[in-house]
Image (cartoon, rainbow, N blue to C red; front, top):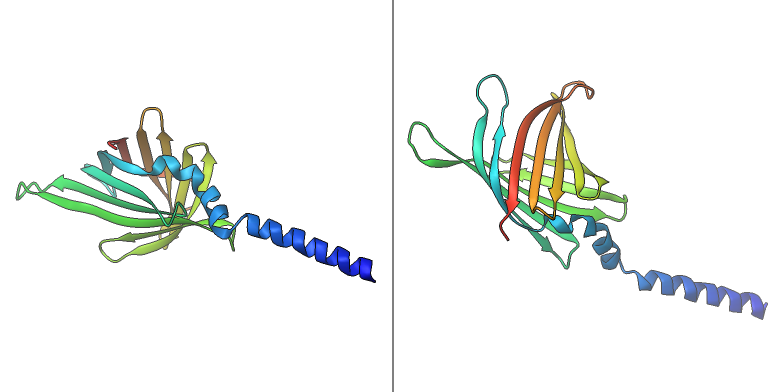
Length: 181
């Protein structure tokens, strides 16, 4: 009986040691490492085309910061264009997003907010090194974004696509950015 108790205590000690060796923060930091190339200040140009007519072009400023000791990314993007009537620059897109890893569901959480009050809980997948896809469903269909980062050239390319049936996709957005720091 003493041997059974001794073995039980030894197993409990080994399991406890393993649990303590990798804290939740360490595990989440590891899961966020594939997004290290996102961090920085990015600028460039893009367009959105929501229907017929000319696409709406804009200059884009993205700031991505690592927060909470590398366990969360805070992403803020602002798109501006020239108002033809007033000849003044105006904000045409302003978004904030939070990216983290949820150990409970073993998935990435990507929550985005727009300045008009809309928000979404999006899915996010790592397709390959520095290639990602994220998206969400709308009442009209599905939206997905494809992100390719080239850390050597310091470029970020992102395209947005819409599908009403989940099979046929139409590109409606593109942005091409360069890291400025």
